[in-house]
Length: 271
Image: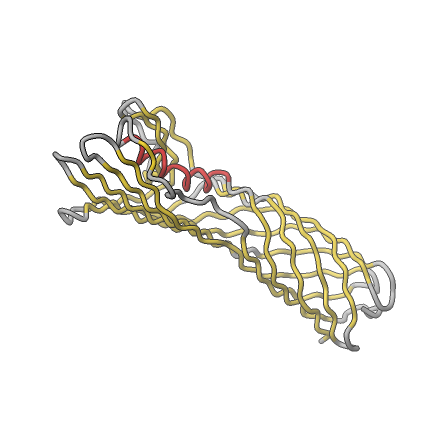
């Protein structure tokens, strides 16, 4: 990347992926196994079943850079990142008792970031460091289906919920750009971020697929730890205030911890 004159604009397009903490989201995924187990006391998990935790996230973005000097540039970026995980787990017990839990968890974030970059070198290969802050609007979509079958009962419940939240976060990273032509460069960069959405607000519906009856709730998302049949399980509840029930051991707000890192590559176009 040749030395840029002050006031010059460039467009940066990136694509990549990384790994975010998503601690509470991972708990949401794991809770399906524990909640299904509470419905089959003394049961065993069906071999081969299981719900994977959220894995690597995709990340795509577009950033407009303006150079303040040959070495300093400011950038405004709009990005899109997220991932989706699906799976199911089954438990078998005595007397033809069985429980099955299927889950789909999807999170989507549209970060709006402001960054400052400092470039080393003046021609050809140029390394750089970056740091900044951003606004992180996030959305969580959750679909869960629970089926219980025994000699005396059979139930099939569906839970669908969507929550939204926003947080301010910080980021920093390093990268390098390589010239292809006078106006086109390629780059690679690694960026770490510290972001936590403290609460999610939205709505959720619980529907009995056998009877057609449903219950719609709005409010905040809670992760509830409960005890049933001598086993401890977790579930997500949407409520306007903290859930309170004799079977509840703990109730905490569901958070989206988006802290982590991404590795991106792309092109920089001189305008």
